[in-house]
Length: 463
Image (cartoon, helix red, strand yellow):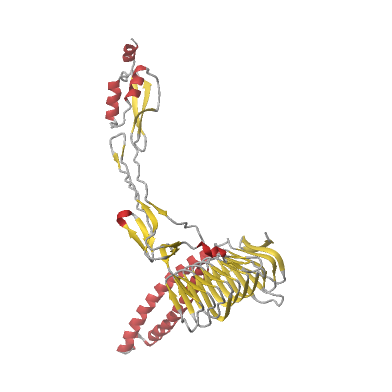
């Protein structure tokens, strides 16, 4: 019989195990010094090579019945570990909704989108939390257990007026109000409404959203944990918000107004004010104001005009007109997060101050050395020792600050992504700054896009 012939033939049988130990293969070749191709011999060789799990007996039977010179015959297969599934959060409200109004072509603000507020009642379910699953261990062809990773718990940060019901894995509202994210924290914010902010209300410091139906008068302030909506005018006042600030009739700053928000700023116009915005700015007019914006500044309404002051944006500035026929000095700066620029300036100031202090200490140390340490009074000797110790500490601090300045300078130098787009005209007197490069507009330029390439600012057609 064929099987008898098989027993007369001799074969070299080798085992190859994959790097992940999940597969074992046979390499079979004729060898007069080898062994007969029997199931017993194959199983013995597999065992001698440590292969004990997932052996494919049908494959071995087929090999012995139909001997062929083959390589990479899959003869054993392990079981891969199956990691658990991470937990997840299901929101029972539309987290993509944004109540950010648009500025129309004629400069008016469309407030209809403000109706997109997500209102909830006390006890409403806000979030369901799906628990993670356990992993399933695997095993190699050599019988070794492969430990599986269990899924990770879903993370959710909770803020004001929400509560986690742990035994049921969901989050509820603890108060009536607007469900929103303040930073990364899920919160329910209640709304504070007033007609005007003036002597009758005093300053406002509120955890949620603030709505002013009239004006915010000079000398007063609003601090909100959520949004601020002003339907009238903001005079020389201070507004600070974690969320968006929307001012329907604009800012008449009088050189005193300070507007700060981690969100977006929407306003009809801005005059003589200081502004710091963590998101985007949309307005129709900016006059003699100092503006810092992390993302984009759009001055694209009916006027679309920037005159005077300094406008700094991390990403982009868009305007129709910049400056004036009188060559009003106007700074436009993009390409670096204003927070990085401020940090750089503050660090330079700190460096210079410490350097001056070290120079003063050096003067005293030099004086003592000229006189001779042994000739100093006991009080002066003690002061000398303290001065040397202080100088050493300040010198080490200077080295740390120098390293930080170098890192900040590298960030500023490598920033090339900002752009400035002028859809009508940039007058003489306009200064364009993109990261560490500068361009002076000496004569009017129309329909231009300013970008940085190869370390220099280029003027391209507007598009």
